[in-house]
Length: 98
Image 1 (cartoon, rainbow, N blue to C red):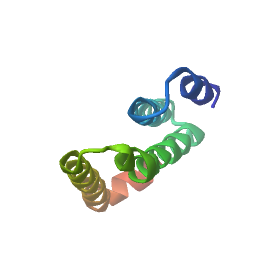
Image 2 (tube, rainbow, N blue to C red; image 1 turned 90 degrees about the vertical axis):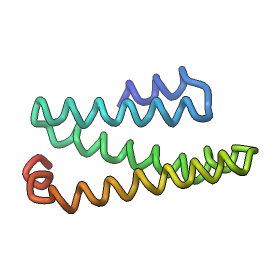
Image 3 (cartoon, one colour; image 1 turned 180 degrees about the vertical axis):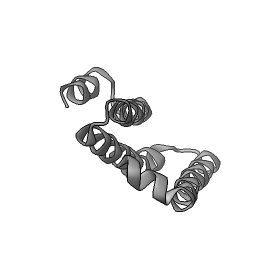
Image 4 (cartoon, rainbow, N blue to C red; image 1 turned 120 degrees about the horizontal axis):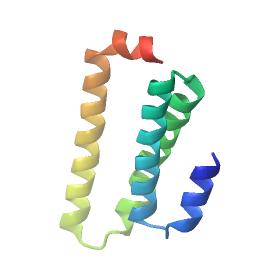
């Protein structure tokens, strides 16, 4: 958790902070899968959830261009649909990992 706080203070707010959170979440999940540690996996999933919420609540609404905002919302929706599809398809495998 110290890495999360350190990276959050180091990176300016905005898109780069959210991208840092998402990258750190994938590192946590990957490390958790590698060393078979549930706390790291759950921390990574929680951090990824925070990153998605931050994108939807703060980052997208700070975009001034309507076309870019619309495309960003569509990309976020597509990413969430892809995650939902992959979870449903590989539900049993994911439950074994978690």
